[in-house]
Image (cartoon, rainbow, N blue to C red; front, side, top):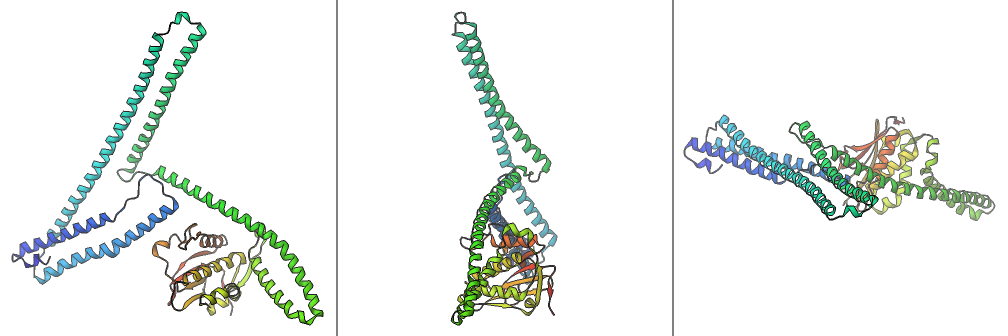
Length: 451
C-alpha cells in the first residue's frame, strides 16, 4: 500500500491500493486455511478426544476473533489511511466488486478441488465394487469348472447310487456356499452405498447426516461409563466394608471412653487425659458421620446447616493444611449468617471438595493466598485467588473424568455437582469478586439469613 501511494497517476494508485488489499486478504485467508482442521467424517470420537476437539474449536474461534479478525480490520483501516494521506479517491463500488470477484474465484477453486476429490473417491468406490463383483463371478465360474472337470473324469456307471447322491450333494453345497458368501458381501456393499446415497440426498448438498457416527459415539460413551461405573462400584464396596468395620470398632471405642469417664471421676489425674481423648474422639466421630452409609440414605433427614457450622467444620478439617500452605480461610458476615435446609452428606462434601481444590491450586501462587466463603440471596460462593480457569475448560470442568491435576481422576466436581443437583441445587462457575480469580457458586433456593 505504501508503494501504491507513490504512484503519480491517481487512478493507477487507487487500483494498486485495491490490489494490495486483495493480496493481503488472500494471504490472510491462506493463514486461516493453514490453521483450520476438519473433524474426520463418520468416525466417532472418545470423550477425551471430543473434549480436545471442542477445546480446539474454542481456540480456533479465539484465533479468528483476536488475530485474524483484527488483522482484517487493520488492512481496511490502512487502505483508508493511505488513501486519505495521498488524497486518492478509492471507488468503493469498484473496491467491493473486486473483493467479491476475488473471493468468488477463490471459493470456486476450493469447491472445484473438493468436487474433484469427491468424484475421484466415487470413481474409486465404483471400481472397488466392480472388482468385488468380478471376483465373485470368477470364483463361481472357477467352482463350476472344477465340478465339471471332476464330473467328466468320474465313471458314474461304476458307482453305487448312494455314492453318486453324496457327490451331487457335495457339489451343490459347494456352489451354494460360494454363491451365498459372495452374494452377502455384495448385498452388504449395496446397502452401505444405498445408505450413503440416501444421506447425501437428505442432506441436500450439505454435510450428510452422521447416523452411524452418532451411534458409535453413543456406544463409546456407554463403554467408558460402564468402566467408570465399575470402578465406582469397587470403591463403594471398599467404603462399605470399611464403614462396617469402623461401625463395629467405634462402638467399642465409645464404650471404652464412657468407662474411662467413670474412672476419671474417681481419679482426678486422669480427668484431663479423658477430656482430651473424648474431644478428639467426638471430632473423629463427626467426620465419620459425614459419610452416611448408602443403605441409610433413604432414611436421612434434612437439617438446618448454618454458615458458622460450615466454617467450623472446614477449619477443623483443613487447619493443618491451611497453616502449612499459608492460606487464609475468610468467611464473610453474609456467609456466617446464612442458613440452609439440606442434607449434611450432600452440602458438606461439596464445599470441602471446593476448598480442597483451592488449596491445591493456590500452592502455585506467590504472595497472599486466600479462600473466601461468601453468600448472597439464593447462593453460596467459594472463591480463591489461584490460577484462573481456562476458557476452554469451563464447559467440561464438571464432566466425569476431566481434571487438570496431575494424575487426577476428575470425580470430585462431577460427583459434587451431581449430588447437589439431586437435592435441587446446582454447582456452577460464577463471576469472581474484586481481588479474586475463581468463584464456584452453589445455587441454594431455600437459603435464609439470620438477623
